[in-house]
Image 1 (cartoon, rainbow, N blue to C red):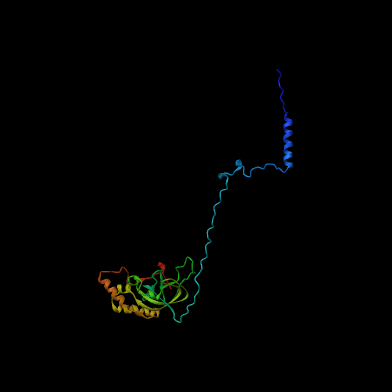
Image 2: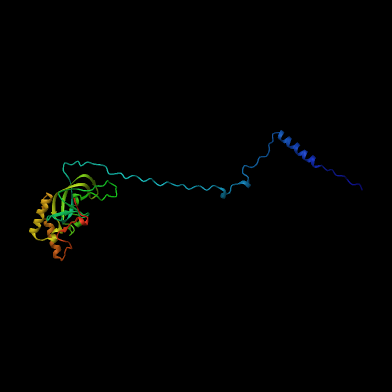
Length: 244
């Protein structure tokens, strides 16, 4: 029995056939297979994505304080407002004097000039405060024992207008009226007339007795109310008082 001998192609011959076929393919217009644009092995995973940065808005810049516009007083009449005072005696002077309720100032005459700080400063409380005419009689404390004298003042100099009143650099007293506080500590008509005359002499302005205030004071006294105030307090420089 004869053995059939098979054919065997060496490796070199197989590689040469591969090169021949590639050359023929490129000659007839073929091209090298391209790699996929997105290889599954190189796809970007969500974890690889860049995290967007938060948008930070800068805080607004503080705006400078703008002072109110300067509006000159156009009326031919004075800028009138009203205010209230207490009564005091200045050492060495027997006549009663007006003193501001909020600050220890004794008014030494009909005209007063006060410290006046610019608008928007920490000293914004300075100046002479007075209420608008439309509020006269509608403020509750005007009918209490803390209100000794009310009156009208003419404002001038630098004046700042607020919702309920004004803050001025200068003021001149135009007329006065005895308040409930005065009538609570003094009911005698001659004594009230003397106080009115002495106030007129010091402040060069008419002073009314205030009969409505007197009637109210008598009603309060009839109900047993007793004011816890001296007849006329004393203002002393040792306690920080000063003359305006």
